[in-house]
Length: 229
Ligand SMILES: C[S@@+](CC[C@H](N)C(=O)[O-])C[C@H]1O[C@@H](n2cnc3c(N)ncnc32)[C@H](O)[C@@H]1O
Image 1 (cartoon, rainbow, N blue to C red):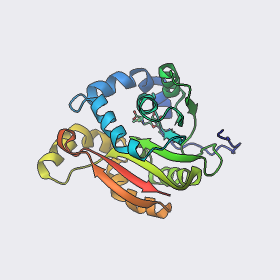
Image 2 (tube, rainbow, N blue to C red):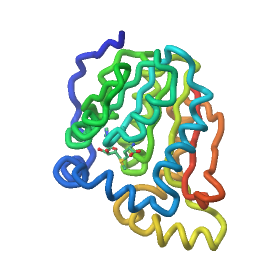
Image 3 (cartoon, helix red, strand yellow):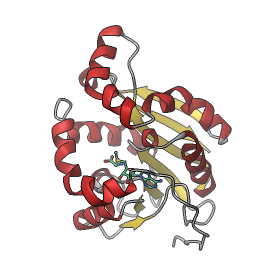
Image 4 (cartoon, rainbow, N blue to C red):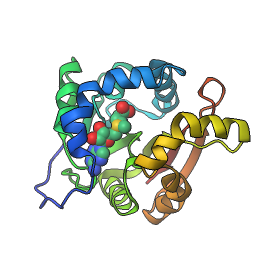
């Protein structure tokens, strides 16, 4: 059983919480399907799950942090051993309410929680996954989130980070900036996050295991970073 701790809430720093609660959660799934149609949202998520599932064992406790409307979390529940315990956590109640509606799994639970203020006891999880969320956070929050993930992971366990990746090839780079980077540069911390993430992971005491760039039909626009506590 997972134990939750009573932690004095720190002021959350996500300036988009109200946007997710009030607006985005209503359109999130539909807009993602359209926005990611050139790759196929399902294909992209399946590709990610295929990469991480070999590292998931029976009975693992898994945290999908910043899980949004739970699309990836429910796909994960469908792919991993049925005796794994999975929690999807997100700061936005709107997103979590959508996620709860998708949940048909007895080993999956969704919670409203700030990634920088996790209410779990130390060493609770064997796997933490954070997908498409670190780029939304500024440096201070990002570092706090990485530190908190480190606290709740068991020794020797994995952190999977799925996020944007700006290709180095000029043609792909132009396409990336047109398709993703331009808006993300205005609205998020994506390029700054990509430049600093490896140093920040080291600072939070993670060991880098691998960086997998999503090639071919994903045009190198995404990456999976695998780290170990
Ligand atoms: C772009 S969405 C990605 C959602 C999901 N991981 C996916 O793959 O569809 C980013 C999510 O991060 C959540 N988020 C942002 N800051 C957060 C924080 N400090 N704590 C928890 N969730 C947060 C947002 O509410 C939003 O649902």
